[in-house]
Length: 414
Image 1 (cartoon, helix red, strand yellow):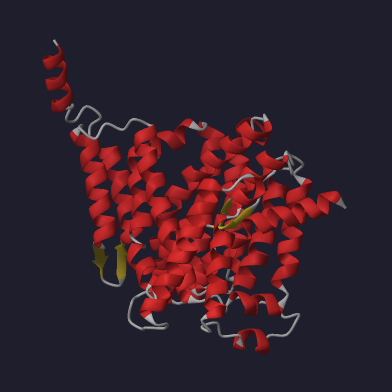
Image 2 (cartoon, one colour; image 1 turned 135 degrees about the vertical axis):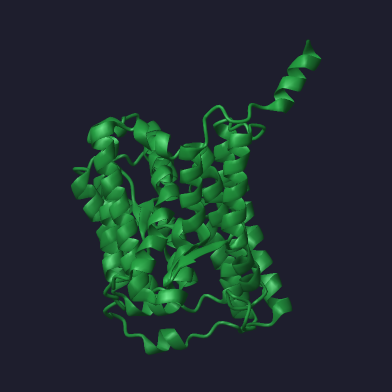
């Protein structure tokens, strides 16, 4: 019984982030819950239930899903996301044959850092629009702008205060806390519409979506898998440090990344966001010393059961736009900071022309919305900048442009 309760507790930690992604992208949060549960169970099968980790909605795919749904619709977007999951499986096969080093060779920090920054910064206008009570594209004013701003700021500062000052278990719930405070304020000002709750039955089949395969959507989504694939390596290292076991060796990185890919493909097959390993849950594992992987099995089962509770799905859809906008302002800024930190932590020298070219071109292509198309085929945003970053890294000579600033500094020292 204690294992079941611990599993439910782990899902509670992940819940805010898990449902935020579908709410932002127009997908069904109930489907996301089922997708996370099924994905986690498949991950456990592939990794022989050795890693105490939970998989759920990936933030890295928010911008691509928003674009994909607008350009090709939800079914074609899901087909593209299935292809992104297949990239993980292929990477797992390559790692099995060539070793972990191949990831660092193909995707070094100078490539991954700016791509992650683009994922965060590219969404900044959407966050601000929603915080001001508008639709994500800014076209429609949904809630009074002045009121929206106060609610968004309350959600934002609550999230910040909890993540910085909270102790113990509460520190793991910054997103959940921010949503709760913003929602209470929204209730006080009467901007919460409960129609979706009244119309929903207690038990209902989630709005599953069958994927369709569109070559443009597939080619658009595949490069987006770059950043989450590298993030996966970091998450596995983190949970290894927490438990004192080397999961890179047993069950092996090839199994964990392939498991992530299978989980993403399974989620996409039903219309849910792609899955990724959740660092919030890793933090909870460290805090509670709950190292038993069976706990995550019960987290997954609980998520699947909740996905069929129609009233819960209806309640999640009542969260007002400014509440989500407030959370997003911190969330997307944090994503960009992770990319920046990747460059700093790995001591990427931006005085070197080679590194400066890769980072600079990647940022401008990604944030500026550069597009490249031939006929009906089109690449832009994160996908295009990801491909450009990889190609520049492979093409530019390693010795290109040694740092002149460093040389001058050395002369001054002498």
